[in-house]
Image 1 (spheres, protein in one colour):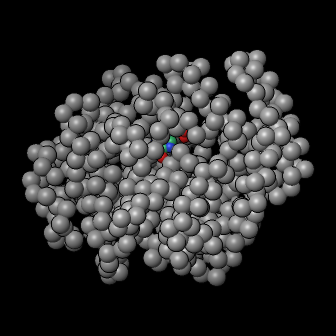
Image 2 (image 1 turned 30 degrees about the horizontal axis):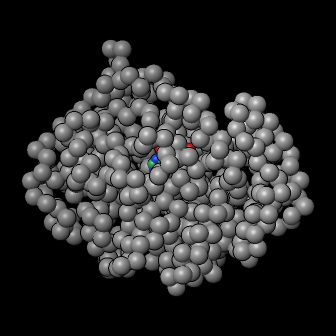
Image 3 (image 1 turned 60 degrees about the horizontal axis):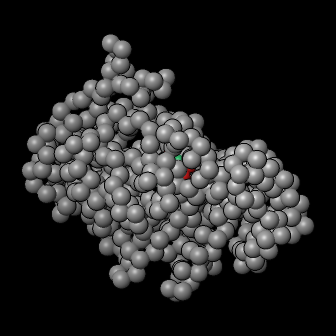
Length: 452
Ligand code: IMP
């Protein structure tokens, strides 16, 4: 059962890229199972900077097969850009496999995403404007265009005609927006098809066979638990399932093949986009977390919302995902606080909720109940083992384990691979070598209405 899942347990940007890289050397496959180019990270290797939104970062290792599962929505233009950027830097894309059942992001999805946000006015979600929601809506409405449709121009055209009949009517009548031309889209997408054809495959079968043969497969989550369409802070969520369930629907393998489920959590909390965030700190503490943690979109230069760790959400994520371990990232950012606050409950209407509340109003309006833990003065970015950590940092980690009932296996104290502490005996035995890559979660929402 050699399947490992890496899942974000907050609102995305938890540092999953670095954790994936730490585990990648032991993997044969790295698989994306949900989301689209609303996610991504920047990988730095010496002077080279790679921005990956769709292609799993495993592609950077020649021994790894990088797979885009059926649960991902693919903007082929973005995918081709990433592929050509990699090739131009001497990185082969020969190990890339794309599910024939993945859905395509179409040009009208981008238009509907933008128009939808405008029509919501002040209730807008702050989407990435990448067409993600409309692409998943079409999938559910059975109006979607799939990767396999690229392989047959006749089928592609037929499906597109029927989709555009409805889309164009809505665009022109409801939004007074210009319409889309079938021929133009067919021409463009058939050009994409020429390049993508050799990469398209039955990735469910490929992964099943690999897992049966005992190959190591890493399922790399995008976004995070609280952005999950079912289990997140709906409607302020993305349109897919970043949680564990998304692995199965998004790749076509069964739960029996999964051995480890590692939840990645920052030592504090951040969020992009609108929506409730009980532990958000809008004053000095938020500014300190933001600047020390460099919580700034790399392209936009805009700040992420920051706040204390929410242990209620962590316990919720442990439950929803069945976590077997936690990777705690950016613990170094908490150095030098005299006291650290951790949310252990939500107070609303004279009641304290210790579990994620069943009604959205409670979560939107609650006051966090904090527990204070002692902070530590010294920097921990040079710590390489448990023994190098101050007792207060160990206490913080212990608290997280008790609150979630899940062991903390990995603690990250900086962006470098070597700035990692393996907490369990088993993980310590493996050692860490400096790798070629540095990861930075880059939620690159240049056009996002978050940032208007
Ligand atoms: P969408 O996924 O573009 O539809 O955006 C829906 C919500 O998810 C918005 O609040 C986005 O800010 C948020 N979101 C989507 N992808 C990410 C991510 O990778 N990191 C953090 N937030 C994200």
